[in-house]
Image (cartoon, rainbow, N blue to C red; front, side):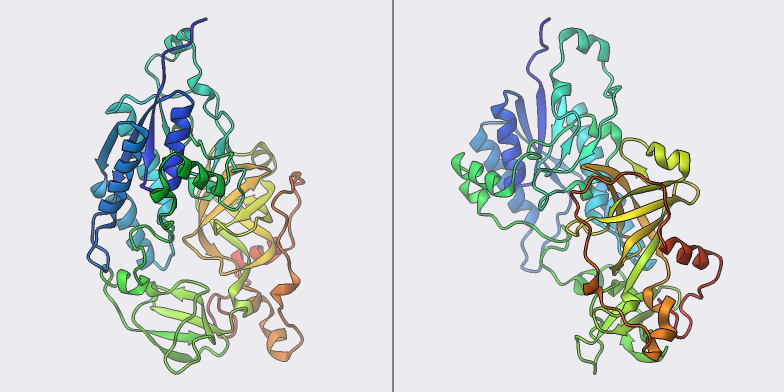
Length: 448
């Protein structure tokens, strides 16, 4: 049976080494490859340079080197509306959002894919993310008969699973945890089986040494190397508020707005040792920022949290549907080790997350991302945390009968394949008491 003609893959190019090598690998495999650079942010940085211009120049260099067509698309308005405006609103509400997750969901795996298919005639889209899917690029190996069956539909029948990359250190499934099934069905991740050092070597050998030596972008893309507080004050009006001690409920100093701080960071209160006070909680209604002494104060550690509706990449796990509980693994920072947890359905698709061990600085607004074996199941935004270790043990803490040493707890090996048992963790009892009013939020000696 005849194989359909050469497939056209549009590779999203950022100007960096990962997407450059992704395009190269696709060309080596015999695909017709085009490069597409998307412009999401076009303002100048603190040095007066538009970094998007430089990235665009590098993306064009990659296309010239690989002898593939170069295309550019402007999503500045879309990014502002769907990502950045939402980013600001969430900060004003006291949350700490992750714009990289939102960008992948609304821009790269939505607007860009729509442009690639409808404007450039793509059969698939590829990116330089370190991730894998259960189908790889097999969906492109179609026969003429298959093409007739698919007709013009973009949807495939078999659901696709998102899998962790071979390079666990570079794995980026965390940032892809909100991508739709429809988008994943037409996406290729050429770097999923490679390590970063191999990718750089390939780039050098292919004549892209300047791209391989380029400094890797870190942090929030539209902030870059700028100071976060200085940047955010350009968009949100400052408002004086108080730092409040979590142990004595006394005012420790003043700040310019709760949105300038996130859970776990140093408060930097004037007159205090900068290493002494850390942010444990915020109240956007009163503009109060709660602080505690010490980076490992028990007020910074929580073992439960509640999310909004979970986005399941493949489908809700059968175990969760049947028993309303699921044992799996959790992380809320992409580079953190996976931690064993139990999910409990809580209505309208949300879940209560009960962790095997307390984690530092669980932050509302961040994404709780769930894993089982090598599969990334999906994610949900953390809406609120349960009671902190301090709020549960403050009497014993102040009497000296209880101390907290996070060094006693070690992370779970992320390579363990967890079997679903449907058993509750002890922390569920604490969370249930919290929901039933057994814990008073932000009262003296039991806030946070």
